[in-house]
Image (cartoon, rainbow, N blue to C red):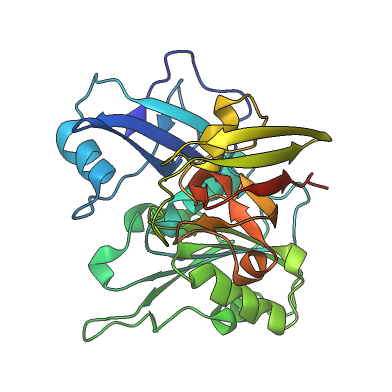
Length: 319
């Protein structure tokens, strides 16, 4: 899907980032994040939306939106981007729709920077017909000697000659033996967490791994509070107490009161609105992109967090 922003391409767009689409669908506001699948071209931004049964936004985009229609978006946003320093080897691991932001990164490396560094893409799906962008990936591999594409299937048909099963650290380390590689992980569920943990356990430095979580919309982990609760926000050395209304997230309440809270996707998928709960009872809807260690350390995501009694939260400055 090609979008032509009314005010032109936002400044500083980077391969790997995403847009948050905002639409009024059947009387309610729906927000979903979609990665840019190509670099900006001729004043346009391109996303890819796979039709998902029961997916409110995906069905709207694929069945109801027409050429010339208007749709609101925020962004681009996200830190899943190419590193400033060029590594010896690029290794991309994707599962399902997680290939989408990687496509823009590959375009950047191959067609714009003309990088000669070795690049391997390990891409997993259930079945062969589920592989997205296959013709484009294969064409790139034919044209660029430094690019290798390795397809994996968990439910292959008879005669499949590619990888079989779940992508693990071994599949990625085999791609770059003995190299100072940089690893990019993007997939749903626990794909990123599992592969990242395996890579670190086998000696890959944590700073050589970046990931983007493709997660479903966060749902209630416990019933949302029916009463208002005061929350003290500590941001950048200042404090402000805000009464969070029933059904209102910490992010919505904070922004309403003028608190300078960072945010991006507003769906629990990017981690930009991460806060630390210093005291009180705050519940974050799941699934979301927080790791188990972050949850145990008292972190929450303001965009899908609700106070169940008085609380104090802080936004830690990024170093």
